Length: 400
Image (tube, rainbow, N blue to C red; front, top):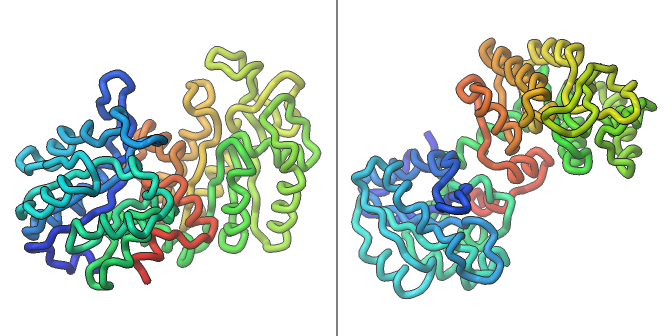
């Protein structure tokens, strides 16, 4: 059993760092995707069921100069109440520190929820200011970090605040526990064959994760725009496909290291190519190293799909970060859907699959594979840094 599950919150005020940085409609300020809010519900509900009260702190958006209406957490109050079942009182403090916040928190009764105003209305939050963290800490009896999406930031509410609580009074929430357990299972205890699928546009975004995975994976599938930098590094003709010229030597180094370590790198043998970057482009299929001038690769082709599916069918552990093509356009989504299907099939046969990174998660959700993979990570940047082998401040602060 986990530390959180074993803890009895009866009569306790739990100060929870959640990640409620959800997208809002620009006109109505209605929530357009509540995934992050839903992910925190099991943690909140367990505390309330124990007879505790909950104080929620989060950031929203990127306010630069203090309070702004569009980034106020007041826009989340109604929906938060609905997610909690409609019978839980949800109070709101128009500040995250200060007199009103302290007064409301002090009067909070068991079974009630207090939502604090946006932490990032204070510059001290992102600076990791200790004095600011101490002011936040005064609001609760127990500190619970359930915001994996911000675990890679050494901010006041995600890392610094933990030092103001004794070891028995600081812990991960259920979401954070799940993220850490899934990540460690893949990074530290992966059953072989272990296949990492790395996609997306740029090699530069994925260098560190690729280098770390060379120490752990048996197979690495590379798709998306970044595949063409590798193709060019191998002497291929890639037309006007995306290519980071300044990363060609990096790609060569990664390929060489993989060879030395016995890691199989799988690049797309063929691509769906287009004469322009547009939904109505003319398309064709060509070998990925023989793309005609003026054409660009925007998805993996049928041969690549077949090979990638075969590799995944033999895998026992799968990490997926990044799509295979421009899946937002219907003409270039077949590769990503096929890979999602292959991951789902392997999972159905007993493999452990972890999907992370905004685009990969969006693809899995959009195409109906949400319940067919083992774990979907809520933290894009945090998950990437975790698999780069970095120590995440939000995790270290609670584990210490």
